[in-house]
Length: 341
Image 1 (cartoon, one colour):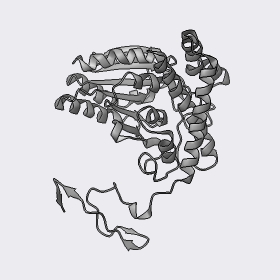
Image 2 (cartoon, rainbow, N blue to C red):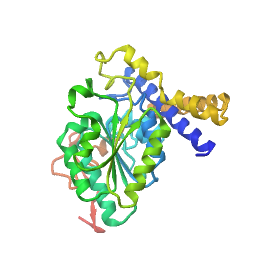
Image 3 (cartoon, one colour):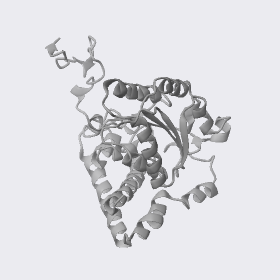
Image 4 (tube, one colour):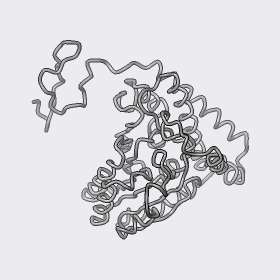
């Protein structure tokens, strides 16, 4: 990659880190409701993986999704507004933290049910294969998802159909607060071997290692060599969610992983050795902080969804007697094949 490309990887990781720190702050101020799952520590995974994909490749992930939304085409303003539940958010304030999505950029979003998005991602890959679009699908999940029936069904179908899909485990080594060795009896790579699927272990704290691995398996998918499985070993610095007191992990363990921080390691091991100056990095840091501050102000000033849009996108065919403030809801005219009905 050239200098600009490398600096963009750094900028994206810093943007995610700053965005998540601001999200945590806004959650404590009750600006964000519901659950909030933060991505601190895992930035190299989304950034490195996305950099190896085409803009129109399909991406599906679990509910730790803010960073994915940012690298797949949504602005910090749009994602923060979605967390605030505002009409200017990525899904008009209807999805919130766990359901950031961007259809225009083929980001099908965070998914709130653990493991349930894997068959959907497999379906996207089979559709691309059937239609000959040339797109591939990246399906990201947590390590806890690999113990669920939909995981095994999706890998089985993908291998049978030779689907152009990459199953990527963001293995932060904890399913909520349960360590991997307690919730799973076999090494992660053996789960792919059960389906005779190509697999790799990847250093998820190294953005370039993630990028290089994704380039390899993306090429396999595009050339008809079928699905791949990546066990990307990473670590989250915060608890499972903001509601998690995170008492299962020791401070010593967390601090040990922070010594391999993906952002500072990339800066010192790659960028500075490539001739990037400290002043250039500091300028990016300042610009990112300003972008996130602007996103918070934008979200806070944005309107909530209008009440008369309450039932939009809920029913294809609205049912009778739905009311808003005691008045019957009059749905907009729906069309099928160009004809009103």
